[in-house]
Length: 90
Image 1 (spheres, rainbow, N blue to C red):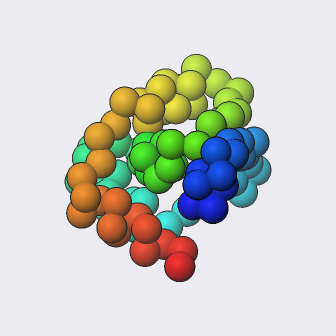
Image 2: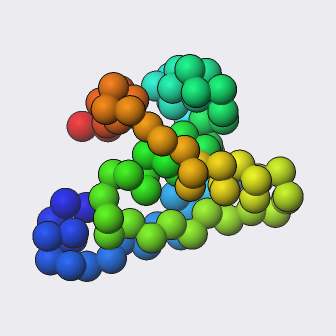
């Protein structure tokens, strides 16, 4: 992602939260609990903050998931949250 951003190339993940196999992580759950939100909202906020070239297309089949997606777009993550989440994958 960093290389793409440096080249000015957009990264557009179609299933940024894992599609039919949702992204799951203890770190996502811990940050979500601290922020009193859902792990999926945290995942979207993390991806949006991760790099300016990420353009997310989170799919949804329900109003509840749409609300969760919107909440993620407005969520503020601290530097501590980001460090914890960035530890999910090397």
